[in-house]
Image (tube, rainbow, N blue to C red; front, side, top):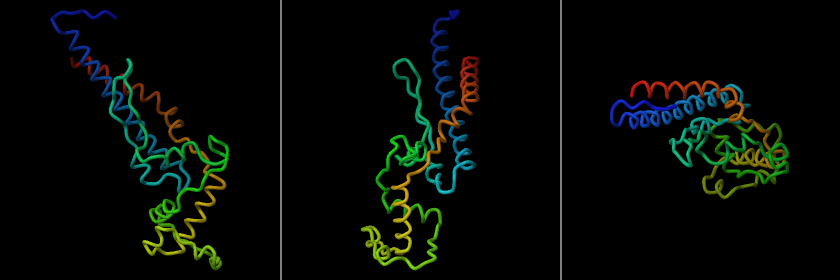
Length: 193
């Protein structure tokens, strides 16, 4: 589409407005996507899958212009755990094989964060009762919590986590509205210039 120049520098102002509109539109649509992912995790995620820390870590990166395209990342900022939830692990995961059990101290912290208390109906076997982790020894923590963390970790290592594709399913639903948000921001910035 040709641009009609009436004053010197008008086309430059339009290009700057277009650039600003695209950047704000991508950021706004990314924030909309993050809110939809949060809502999806709070409504659909099975108990224990989406921790509060994972939900709070959802962010949108800064918009950058690289190789002729504007890009931004929307996702989590806490490492690999969300990807394990998204793709699954073990036989259900992308590798279709058992994995190494997760660290017990991570499961222990998860138990504490969720407020889960161990309720053993039978007496804890002597071998598990004597199980101590190097962190457990230094903290002098409750051995029943460490036993429960060990059992959960072992189960995850054997069976794995079933995938919960919270990013792709939410994106498929939110994509039309994200496009609308981007177009609205570009139109608004071009009108104001």
